Length: 205
Figure 1 (spheres, rainbow, N blue to C red):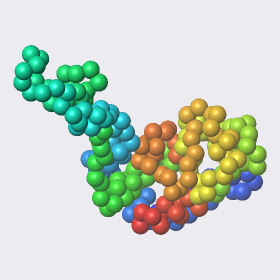
Figure 2 (tube, rainbow, N blue to C red):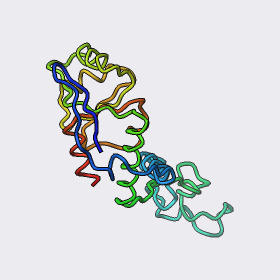
Figure 3 (cartoon, rainbow, N blue to C red):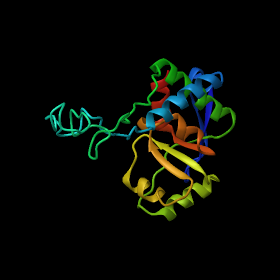
Figure 4 (tube, rainbow, N blue to C red):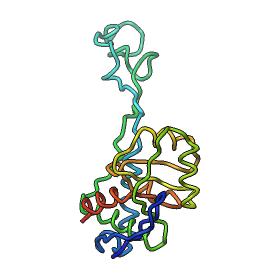
């Protein structure tokens, strides 16, 4: 299929040939949902951490003899019913990640890219960069393309572009090696450079 490349600066609009199996694939909603759930679950951090009686420091010696003292039996001062003791049912850090095969992940990414193209939310340009790290320069470039809420994908993320984008609301930028399904569907439009398209095509073909 042919993908339109929007004009940048003085250059005229043109087209590029891309693989149908990457940018014209069938929309597979269940697969996309499964991959998104896996991605979001993998982003969770299981930070709960409590110590049981076996993990609390100390308490190795029996505090008093078993019989004859008139007090309740006690084997350790780190018992859950003692102050400073362990927790009865201690909460532990948990791994929320869900396994997704590479083939499934790539299939979902192909489906997402194809749907973005069909919905005309996929904008390809020959290049996108700024000479200085100024927000004003990035805004001017986006206004020329008629874009407001957009994810910018480039082959090599320059420092000037990163610094220029970070203060613009609802606009983000990432390298083509860092593309994830959540970011792709989270923006109104996806702006991608021609070099990044070629890299994505090579990755997903």
